[in-house]
Length: 251
Image 1: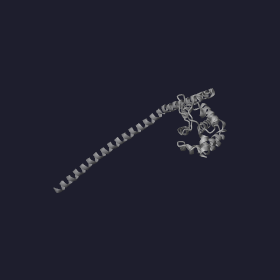
Image 2: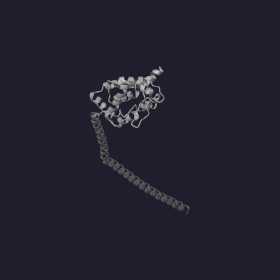
Image 3: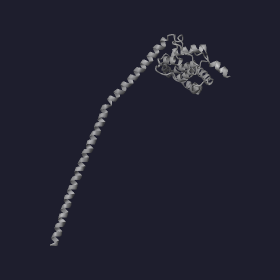
Image 4: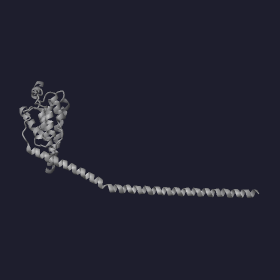
């Protein structure tokens, strides 16, 4: 059984030549720049040579999740999970359970997406063209690479066909996204500026209220001070009057 697994998942991995590059590194670069169809192309070429190449299945899985390929995604999930279950190498073992559990987690979401309106579904698919998004399975692929199960990208594999429609769509989607962000930022600044008069008015009201309160306090203090003075004078007068009466009686 162990030997069977060894032959199923083993693929010839040579040392990196000057013209070669790590599979994970090259695929990640393509993915971040929006060249996801090129990444899928490489994965499919590898699967054509070795249908049990888990790293290629993971790239395919990422692509189908990104672009909501609901027809093929369930099969890709199952295939990746089955291969992951049988791969118990030192570094990959950390990600094994995650890949194995993906069908259970993602299949209910597929059902929900099938019930989306056509407009919402198209919006969801369009998100796949957004650049600077990392490959979600990258760390799992890197772990397979560290275990010696992934061949480097050869110079021959780097000769990719052009995908002009994808390139145009990537540019369009990202330009719209950038403009939307700018509009939101401008709107935020405008709202901030427009709120200044109201803020100043509130602040002015607070200041006037404070002035009024201070004035009232000052006036009250003055009244209290005057009242104290008056009581002192009255008190002294009464004391003087009583002393005068006492002196008069003693005579």
